[in-house]
Length: 104
Image (cartoon, rainbow, N blue to C red; front, side, top):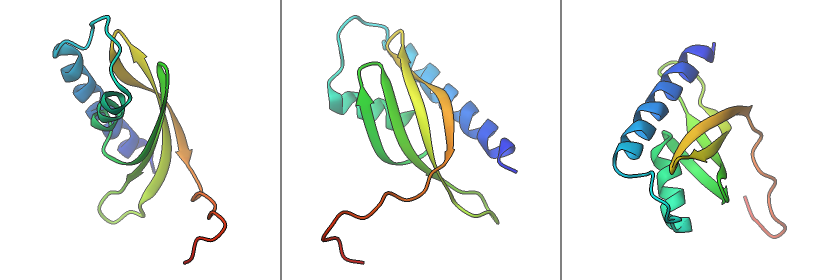
């Protein structure tokens, strides 16, 4: 069942986000796109891709636990008072389609 893992991941993300906010994340200056991606990555565990659009972000995450099949999920984050927080868990996502010309 995913609820146990989700609760642990959410707790860990909230702990990290709280730490980021305590480090002065409430300023009025806009971080660079690279800083946004780093902050989003810090709010999650294993992250493969991040797309930031203003105060919203989507992160493709991979997670696993002992004796369980790995899971690939999309997590939506929002920026509030300068810190990123998890807004919703998108659930398992299929792999992206291959681009024309990609070889296996």
